[in-house]
Amino acid sequence: MKIGHIAGALRRLMATVAVVVTVSALGGCGLVPKIIELHAAAANGKAATTLRIAAQPYPLYSDVLVAHRLGYIKQELAKVGAAYTWDSFKSGPLVNEAMAAGNNDLGFAADMPAILAKSSGQPIRVVSNVAYGEKALAIMVPSDSTIRSVSELKGKKIAYAKGSYAQHLLALRLSEVGLGLNDIQTVNLGAEDQIPAIENHQVDAIVIWEQYITQLERSGKARVLADGTGVKRGNMVSYATESFIKAHPKVIKAYNRAVQRGADLIASDPDKAAKAISGDLKVSVSDLKVIWSHLTFDTKLSDADIRAIGEVKDFALKNDMLTHDFDMRNFIDTQYLIDGATDAASKED
Image (cartoon, rainbow, N blue to C red):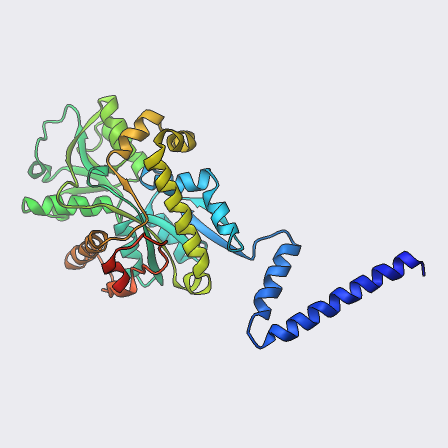
């Protein structure tokens, strides 16, 4: 055997001995499985954990989208030995379906879809806020419509995505004038399908969110009849499966840290943030900045956020929209928020 080969064999032998000694020393601490997992991941050039994200391509979730497009999620997850995949869906109910099927670990959606998912028995918890905004959700009618008040919607065809937070706003506004969802003709349409429906006068009204509110107003095709001002805070939240949260708490916190970076950039440099996601959303930079004036982006779950989400749950329960009731303490989990992203009341939960 050549001297070089002998030397190489000796080095490999010493490395093996070192690993055996290290594993033996750490075995009693329960660290061996983690060490082996990380070593194998590094050897294969892969992260030890993959967070499978169920996303939605709407400006309501701009801080998450900015964090995705500018690499913040990748960077923060890499710090804890994780990576992620990104699947896009057109509505919160579709995000719920993907998570219920076991295809995704974390999703973001409006308050109502998250509540419906929990009520149906899905083992999920809200781990952070994404945004909120009373004016980012509205009932709209064609610009030339004779309808001037919510009470005039009785018997009319109204399009909205069933199970979305738009359904909740409509129910709230109808209840104010003594009406309910049974007093209107429901047309179950996703947001994109609502646009041609209202432009072609196939429905009398739609209940829709941003970016479509700003775009319809700018085009002159529709006007706002009523929005969420004074009745619906309109929270968007991130929620994850309890199994993933329990197994990978540091990954959840890293995700929240990345999203907060996206929120901070929207506040400090809206031009840079808007340019980063304008193309993905097919929304102009100028329109994005108008839309953002209707929203507050923050991962913090404040007293007001928790109370508003609880009110949505109570309303849905009272109106037989939930399969089962549930304890809010088993739904909203603030322990994975980044430092400073929770208030005193939240810390006590």
